[in-house]
Image (cartoon, rainbow, N blue to C red; front, side, top):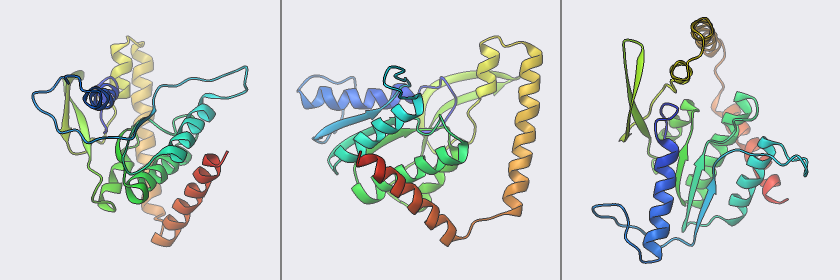
Length: 220
């Protein structure tokens, strides 16, 4: 699930997890109708936090939670992940997110909902037909962002982070500089993409390395 910040991605996936729990214990669910399979576990990686006393950074806490999911998950589990890989370099974070998604969807075949701002991750649906892309909707009118809080089929290629900064009343000069730098980065990324395209073999090797990394964490 992709889409703007504050658009409802986290709320949507957490609500789905709560619906599963409510249905499984025999309670009413907030739906007109629902077909909910029996799950053996609801496994979550949400929020952000650290433990200074234990020497665990925010990113390490995220990795430990994910490793616990990898050790526990079965094909009858529901996994919800609210962002993964934010606390490291973009390339590392994207690699981890891709490898985790491919492992859960392609190897474990569990039920899952993954909220992410890595828009490139939506391309995994081309490799794994069991993966479906959804997005939370928003419209921009005259530079103003309006969140519609609806989940619709398809991918979204923008996160509207700068629009949210405007809503938080960032100074105009800071917002203008952010827009300019974001545009420069997009141009740089486009140039880099034209200059260097990884082969399928290199891509497979990278995915294998990331998967091995996750497996080592899962064995801790």
